[in-house]
Length: 430
Image (cartoon, rainbow, N blue to C red):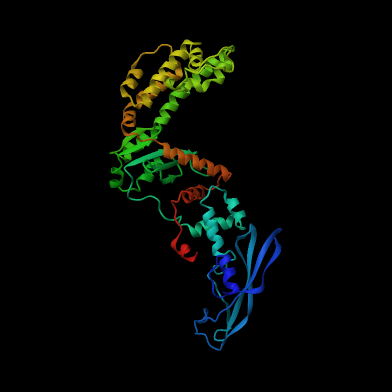
């Protein structure tokens, strides 16, 4: 096979009309960087004049070459270019000139379609848009144009079909977004993101869900949320058949914060045991049955050999308020971990005199959501998937050093998660 075949194969190009010179590659310094420049020419006999449409004859003559420096994907980590001399023709029927075209690059563009494809692939990874531009030897604006041209951002994400179980949550949005937090909706069973809304405020969410058909909203049976009151109002209004499920993680987090604040309050007063209370805070928050009571060893801040259980017993016994708050915490933790509604109700209905105000507030909050917590114990649904997606969004935002535009931010999330597919016409080109 010819030299042209192997070079084109190496550069991942399919074009029969491109031919390489004998000295087909040379090294140059372009924009201060060491680069490889491949030398080739493009020529063929056109079927007709693209300006006037006359079929090729003797009045259509060759008219020199026009050079284009086309950016192609890097070779051996070096910026690479294709210096392509395109055959020009002059048509004496219309007295106009035209240039041969090729499928490796669009008309009037100096970025090859392979490079655009490489950019599109890199956009699916957790790297910043600036890094994508650097890796592909283009500008950040070029990357944005590839997003607009390669991905169908105008395609509506919302549909007339919703899964039977949904998960609602929010995450810190960009500065340009309306409101500080944006809304995210996921399928509870698969974890797949359904859509992201710029503003999580109630009025905006009501307008958003009004786009869905009434039947699709009626088909939703369960919605998992944290204890954000507007979500409850939204569900009752827009999803009349859906049962509200409170995420168990947020319930445990609520009582853990109350116990922790009680510990910190005592820690600030008790200077003698300050270091002990500060160092072993995780042990206090542990489920009591998970504490080790058999391994005696030396612990920091304690002179004698002791166990994890003995350390916790010592710390909570320092203060009556902390001790009773700790007991309530353990009862609630047992109820949540074992889905025991009886223990939960008994714990909530007891009268407590010495527990901290923080825990009293938590108990009051849990009482308000008791009916929804019952659904939590029955369904086993949780917000684990959506919290994982939120963590991914935070990482993406951090890597990119933030985003100015919410639409561009949403586009990157959707592209990375595979929720926006390449346009068919671009896929055919590449």
